[in-house]
Structure formats: structure tokens, C-alpha cells
Length: 341
Image 1 (cartoon, helix red, strand yellow):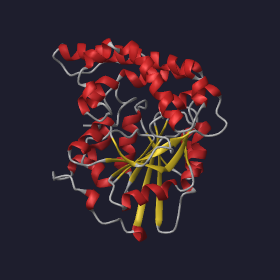
Image 2 (cartoon, rainbow, N blue to C red):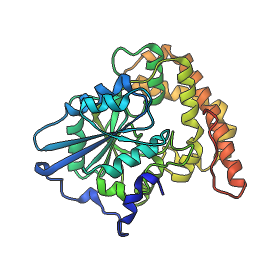
Image 3 (cartoon, helix red, strand yellow):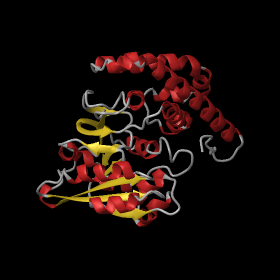
Image 4 (tube, rainbow, N blue to C red):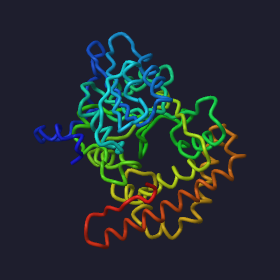
């Protein structure tokens, strides 16, 4: 059980409520919690908190919790000065535990998880709450490209968020990434929370509880109007490293939970590992096609770098998948240590 959710385990067992058909939350008495995990985010945390506070409106009380995950650069002080309540994690280095801790100490409904390098656009909060008022229990917003990023950071954005930008239509999806994700409080408390076990705590930490909700009959809803700008970090080395890390847990996380597009394919991990190299080219073409349909042509001239990121992704998927299979064959829990730390 995640340490950040210990206080939740005192709840008496009961069936998960069907909040899709519940009455809208009364706006007059609504408190909303925004949980922001942060580690060494001095360059961005002030603007993130400021843009969240700018979403305030009559009848909605905003509770902003910045969970400091072991920073050594003054992030807690800057977050407090910006108007957030700061929760200190010790020891740090586990973003999933930081999210769970923030949820455990929050008091609002819904609970919104927002990454520290994301700045909400005007209307973000209103779009999330409107989706919840229509009966949606789990709502994911879109991740858009902010102006002024260097080319390597823009390429990193195109490699990661081709399925969750504001040009995509609203509707049911198989997976919602955690940088911009809102969930009704009661639903989140009925799950095991974000996976704190390594190496999943750094990537795919949301898939287990999303899979739990989907198996209970709840859908994941994508709302493109709930936009945030994701400030990807620059550097070609960062691009390759981050894509390797994302892929390292892709096969076990998706195979165990089913919270993925083409979930049937991840139930055949050996096939994926064997085909990882040619899949890098297929994945590159798919990404370019997604952006072309959205009217974004810049990724086309970045295609060599995008292909390099897919090769890094394929390597991470093969190495992580193979080590996961080896751990399973050993008869113990299917845990395996990451290679990037």
C-alpha cells in the first residue's frame, strides 16, 4: 500500500460509487484541490502557482498544495511566496509518493494533479469542473506547446504529447497522463493510488489506479479545453534519456493494467521486445501522422530527431521488458531496478 495513502486505509470497505451518474457538485460550496509535485523547480514553480491562482472564480475555493520531493534549490520557499501550501517529503525522489501525499492531505473535490512545469491556460479549471458536473469521474486535460521553447524542447514535446493536445476531440480514452489530470475525490480514495514501487514511480505510475477504475466500470474522459502549457526541458541528451525512461516500464505497466491503447499487444511482451527495433520506425511515422492531422508541420523537419527518440524508446522498452520478464521467471515479485539512476 502506498505510504502516502495510509490514512485512506481506515475507510470502511465499500463498493466504488458510480459518480458518472451522480448529481453535479454544488458550485456554491465547492473546494478544489490542486496537487503539484515538485523537485528543484525554482525556474517554474512561481509561474505555475500563479497561473493556478488566476483560475479562481466566485463560488470556488482553491487549495494549492506543492509537495516538495526533496528539493535543494529553494523550491519550497518560492512556492510559499507564490501562495501555495507546501508539504515537505523526506526522503525525496519519488514523484508518485509525492502525488499520493498531496492527495492524502488535500480536502477538496475534485483532486487535480498538475506537474510543476505546466502552466494552465485561461479557462482550464472551468473546463475540468464542467466535465465533472456533466458526470465524468476522471478527466484529463490537454498538454499544449508554449511559445518560446528551444528546438530540442519543442521536439521533446512532439515526441511525448501527440495524443493529448488540444486539437484532439473530447471523449473516452484508454489512458490519461498525470501532468494534467483531475479525479473526483471519492473515486481516488477507492484506488491504491499512484504506484510508489520503483521503477514505476518515475514513469507510468498512474496506470494501476486508472486500470482499477476502468475495471470497475468507470471511463477516462479527455477534455481538450482544459489546456495547460507543458514546458519541456531542452537538450538532445535529455530527449533521448527521457524517452528511454518512459519506455523502461511501458511493457510491465501496460501488460499488468490494460490501461493502454492496443492493450492486447502488451499481453505479448516477447513479441514487442523482438519487434522493438522496426517498431521505432512505425512509431515515428505514427507520431508525424498525428501532428500532420492536427495541422502541425514543424515535426516533419524534426523527423530525424523524432526517429532517434523512438530508437531510444525502443531500447528502453526492450531492456525494461526483458528485465521484468526475468524478474517474473525468478519466482519473486516482478520488480526490477532502473538503469538510468
